[in-house]
Amino acid sequence: MPAGDTIFARLRGATDAETTAIAGRLGVSGALTHDREVDAVRLSKEYRAAGGHSFANVFRDDHALTYREILLDVAPAAAKAAEWRSPRIKDTAKEEWLEEYVLWAATFAANPAREKLTDVERAEARDHAEAALDGRFEEASVLVGVVAGVVGGVVGGAVGGYVGAALATANPVLIAVASTAWVVNWAASPNMKKVLPATMVFIHIRKRLELEAVLKDADRSAA
Image (cartoon, rainbow, N blue to C red; front, top):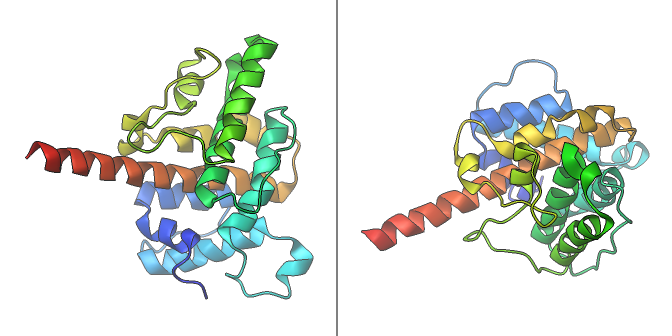
């Protein structure tokens, strides 16, 4: 069992609210134990099972499917929801690059104001997302993204600023995005309806941890 991979690392770093959100998106039945390790093993198995192909799952370990393999399926699904072309993903693309693309595509798809955007603005948002697949995006110290546009219903220059501070509160923005109606109503496979919103929570966990690290460094510098 790859106990040190990205999925386990995120689950171990999750808050109770994030763990509950992942369980809810995956449709996990029964109450969580709130034992970090026990719940991590259970949710890892459920997430990978939903992210894999049913036939292939029969022949591999419950925790064998990697996070990157899941993201390779989630990215084009998010693009489809955003009504974008399917992304071209290089073998060298890192997990974080794929996550940034999914973040942009999913939040763009969830934005009720996107229908009012011009073709130029739509293309700008898509191009920004595709740049992330080459590792060209703002680092954690800047925390730029599109979530503010989703939450505020305003898109400036096709995208809004990423609400980094909100990720440290009890009202996580990406978890809210993962609950929007487009995920529920979108005509995707039943498994992807679980996997994509759950992945948004996994992305949220990374963003929160990055923000906390930035704030900790700032505190050290100010001391």
